[in-house]
Length: 356
Image 1 (cartoon, rainbow, N blue to C red):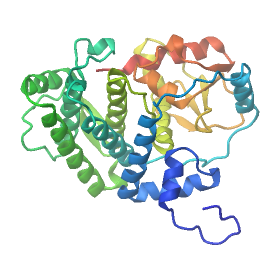
Image 2: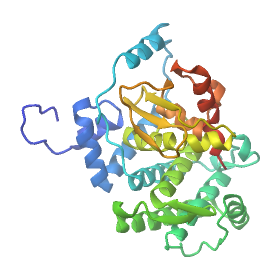
Image 3: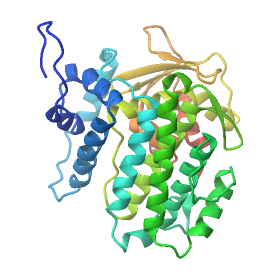
Image 4: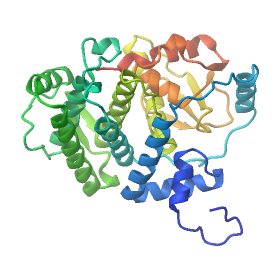
């Protein structure tokens, strides 16, 4: 693209999407590409096919090169020194984030071998589950979302609306059935959900639906499903010996923003309350920063220049994996400016809301 002379922005090309999928695009082009992805489902599918292929092929044998000993300290120092300009990457709509993550999961499932489906997965809460069981769990919750949106999927009879009960019923129904049935049901449920939320539009994302026994804005339910789908897709990748794959930057930005907004709820779930305390998250992998009032759920704002009680400098992808209990808080790498004890309490609480 590379047009900086004030002339109209040229259209996004397949080459631009390829560069974006490899995170090799120019910073100046990021906003235009992200906007194009928001507006074009076909472009999203193309970009995700390219990104997924790049992620899978990245596992090819290469010589490991140890990073320079001072690399981490230099990156952190630079993050502290300057704030990346706003709008480096545009956050994706919850509709797009959900669509992309389910599409990536379906691509993964369709590529599995016969042996892959019986491999065990490693998260402790999924002890005894196989890859097939994880896929059925995804079906259970994706079909629940479609049902709660008023578009139940024909052929999926489960009526339970709780996570554990619905998954158990789906596992029982799929026992002895081929994995292709689970893939087909996941695709049907995702298509029903996507068609419904697309028809409703962005303006109705704040409308509540019943989700896991309580009301939740439609946009939040979509992000919960996207988070879960990404998490379990990575569970499957680990089980079959593939590298985990992060969401595209626009999706990750939206997920990280949502995660920050729920930090007060995470602390409350651990019995910790810090009213009036202000924490800034600075994400080095996104060039984004937000401030969170720990006393108010959802009180998140773009980072300013004022004082905060603690600034946590880390990667958004690590925080999101911490929220989904895929990184132990004790192993999450971060740096702190300010109250280290408060920052530790926040990081320790990240997985407090994680479920199956």
